[in-house]
Amino acid sequence: MRHPGPVARLVRRAGVVALCAIVALPLAVSAQSRDYLLGMPYGSFTLRGGFGFARAGSDIFDEMTRDLTLDRSDFNSPVGGVDVAIRVAPRFDVVLGAGYGRSSATSDYADFIGTDDLPIVQETEFTRVPLTASVKYYVTDRGRQVGSLAWVPSSFSPYIGAGAGATWYRFAQEGEFVNFETLDIFFANLESSGWALTWHAFGGIEKTILPRIALVAEARYLFGSAELDPLAYEGYDNIDLSGLQASLGFQVRF
Image (cartoon, rainbow, N blue to C red):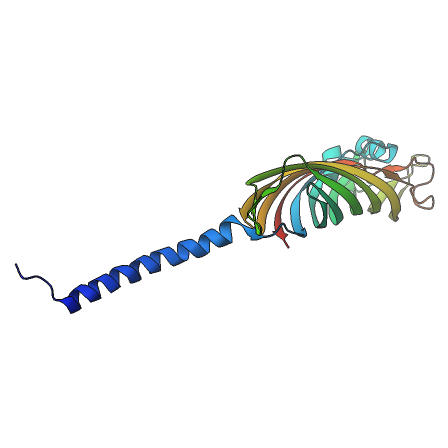
C-alpha cells in the first residue's frame, strides 16, 4: 500500500482542522448567543395579545341582557397590550403598560318586533383602554451570575404583580329602541365615554428562548367602574369595567 506523502498528510490534517473549526465555530457562537448575557438585563419590552372576559356586572349590562338578545359573553373581546419594564432590584421591576379591548355585537329586542314585522335592531360596542403602572415580583431568581461578567437567564421565570392606573372606556349603541311607556320605536345614537381610576393584579411565567428573547403567558384581572353619561344613560349605576384577561406575549430584554 502506498503511503501518502508529507504534503498530502499536511493537506489532510489542515482539512480536518478546518472541518473542526467549521463545526465548532457555529457551536461556540450559538452557545454565546443562547446561554448567557454580559450582565443582567436592565429591563424588557413585551408585546402581548389574548382574550378578555368582561364581568359585565352592573345594571346597564343587566338591562341589555334582559331586554335585548345579548349575553354577557357578547362583551368579551380580543385584547392586546404593550409593557415596558425597568429592573429596580434582582427580583423586582417597575412596569408601565397600555392595553386595548373592544367588543361589538348586533342585537334586537327579545319581546318586541317592529310594525313591519321585522326585528328592532341595534349595535352595541364596549371598549376599554387601560394605562397602567405596576410592580412586578419574580417568585424565583430570573437568572444566575457566572464569573464576573456572564449572566445566564433561567429557563422559566414565574412572577406576580399588582398596580393601578386610568382606564378609558366607551359604551355606545346605535339603532332602533323601544319607549316602554308609549311603545313607540325610535332611532338613537347613544354614547358614554370617559376615564376612571382602576387597579389590577396579575401573574404569569416567562419562558426563555434566547438570552434576550422570551415568551410570556399571563393572566390579569382589572377592577374598576366608571360613571355613565347621564345625557345618554340617565338613572344607571356606574358601568362595570372589571374583567379577566388571558394573554401570550413576545418579550425582548435590554
